[in-house]
Length: 111
Length: 117
Image 1 (cartoon, rainbow over the protein chains, first blue to last red):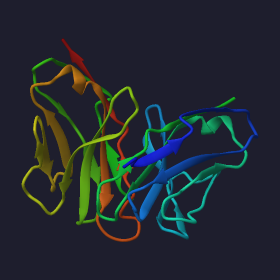
Image 2: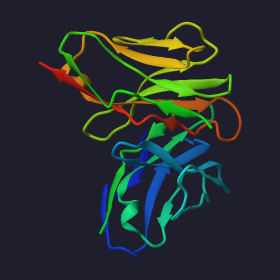
Image 3: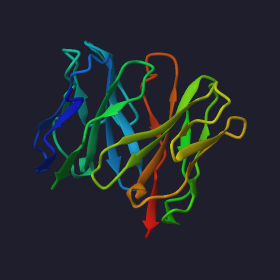
């Protein structure tokens, strides 16, 4: 099994550009989520989903959109990138009630 | 709202010695899980150990054990016989065990552990 796959691993954007961070899991997990990790801040929840067609906001949702059209995929969209969105992004998935499986992260730099 | 506090930004231990990382949390809920995650320089998030709030017995996984004090809302991680490969950032995390948001983790800010040879 591939587990949780995130692409790309690294990305550099200019302010105002848009992009989508991809996340896919092959474990048929209902729950998927996106976190961002900043130095000295730990990981903070951006958005999450408990099933296809269902999404909700986490602690830091502003500037990000998500959708969940299939169980496997949970893309994170930045519509107009800002320097404050420079961070490492993690996607994670699980069966409800079980521990999270994390992807390997995407390092995003916005200049 | 729930919060998780790790009061030690950095810790250091001699190889083969024992080190304890501290974590406190605040919640009004009774049904929850606590976790310790390890993040080596590779950036991968690795689950080290988990504790269910309703279980009084402290969880152990090989050289890793926890001291779970529910009344004090304390959840420390003890690493015995420290190895060079234990050097990493360690995160304490909390999640409720019910409801639609039960998958959501709340993380502390992390403790960077160095292991000296």
